[in-house]
Length: 491
Image 1: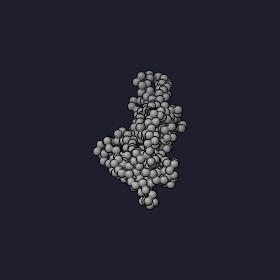
Image 2 (image 1 turned 135 degrees about the vertical axis):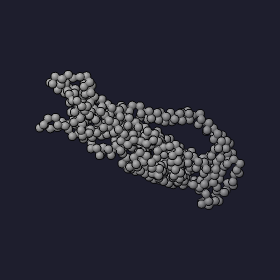
Image 3 (image 1 turned 30 degrees about the vertical axis):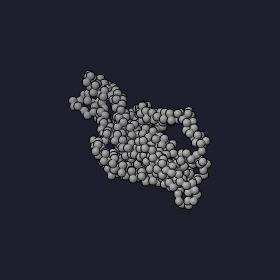
Image 4 (image 1 turned 90 degrees about the horizontal axis):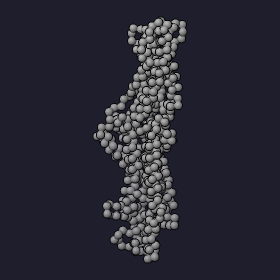
């Protein structure tokens, strides 16, 4: 991996790269006689300066400088501080995002559908609507718990659930009030009544942990609802039985104490091979790593092959001659390689996913999305390293991985993480990438389920990478800040 070396004292003039071991020093007059187009600043034909070409005083000073660097406290403290800082940031974000989901719960969307028609208890009086009473009790019980409970019609609520925009749906059916009346009168009836039922729908395609949070809330609602409605029905039944002088048996009280049945159902069950809703997260990680890590590998290999950094193979230490290639040319090569790698790696990913048995209902759509994502991430990561040099590696690590995974919402929904992760998800690319992969794998590739956001935001990252890389590379080239070492002094 290479760094950006600024030559503040050379004003962009050509320098002499060090010669390879065993090579003879060319005639010192050769550069002066060469034409301006014979070799660029990084040309392999430029003069080479041997190790012993400087005078003894300069050589001694040059030998002392590296050891002075090693003796400096900064040499030892800087890598320790950087590594410790990055790892502490990693620990704080990764663990902090999952350690207290119930405490951090906020804006967790659940729809409440009330279809109750009411029931007539006495002629000439309006029907009693227990469904509205129950609905208001559920809404009041959700306050202060981080649940965003909204009343809605069945159609829009089901559409949000089936596109991952809500996590559960509660439906109070049309016959709810009549079932409550029938159950209350069952203490003196000879037939077994139908208990009031509330339908609860969840969708694990929105995330396994999100479904678990929704189920926990539904169970809490069932307990609270039965306590309140059960006590109300027991009081009404006792009053009616006392008037009729009919004993109120323990069996009747037990039946009325838990009057409501909460019927939980998966709206669209996951197929086998979906890793309980986690396959989308792991595919997202594969795509981001392919772009981010691939850009680093391409940078290292191309720099070694082009002579910008040494190529080491075990004990071999090779420094190849440099072609007359400016910064923009080198960056364009890495961009092109990342596009080729994206197409190939996306196809290889599909092969591996098929071999391990992962469910993939839309392989071609996933291949196109994967190619687009890897290309965008790879180009942006390559631009980061071209702009910031060695520091770009650290910036890429923090931007794509350290900030990306906890803000993706793939393991724990953002609504169950501290709000800072929601803000990070507006910048870090892993959240929109995850939504797109989840949409293709679980939601039929619907734009409403997140694919539209993925294409838009990933396209923005791609454009930023291309424009910033081009502009900064041209600026560096025009300033004469070429990728080379400073000239060695001559004797």
